[in-house]
Image (cartoon, rainbow, N blue to C red; front, side, top):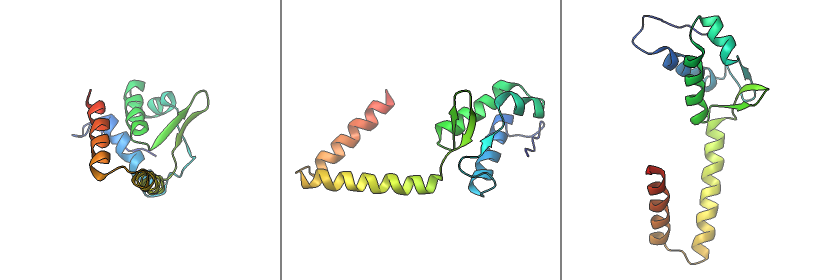
Length: 120
């Protein structure tokens, strides 16, 4: 399933991450599909499990996969559909706040505060 170039410019974990992303985006891997365990994939590829773990952690952080303890690692729901839903939810929330008297300036101030917290 994975083609790893040990001599390539791209690190091994980046190769794993980018290939899984590509498989998800092209539909080879679908939401709910189970990925190999960290240990099994590392064994199959002849690499350190920490390398696979790093790729999986980055994929999880970016919403491509999720982990269920003692069950495994799975492909997350369709990102585009999730982003559309999140946008609809945000618009609905903004409309509600607007109807309750919040101005654009108020909302931008709240956004700035949220992003400032993120930097800390």
